Image (cartoon, rainbow, N blue to C red; front, side, top):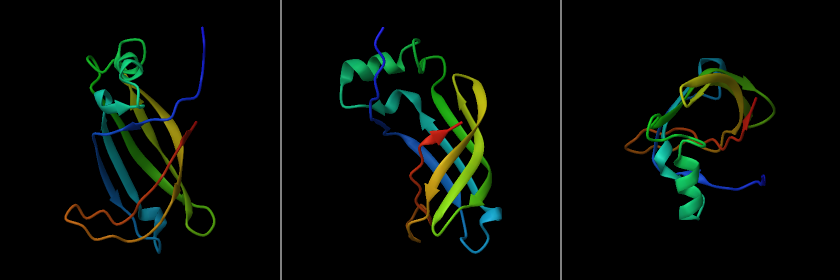
Length: 119
């Protein structure tokens, strides 16, 4: 068996963020990700990751994240504590996030976060 790090993204997701840097404790984050939208740049690998061996997208079409608290770190850096559900199993995770700017769009997305998961 071989194990390696692979970068990829999910192309189909919805994200609802309500965040005010003046009141981070009131922050709220919810995400719903379509498991079959995984994209690593290699179709065969994407199909394998969507299979029952990994995400099992047919039986569990979505991954969800519900933030439970936002913890200020330093400057524009935060930790978002929450519950991540994959394949019907929920675990507590902490996402490292960076507040980058207010944006006003038709989807009302006021903050942007990049967040690798950490358990």
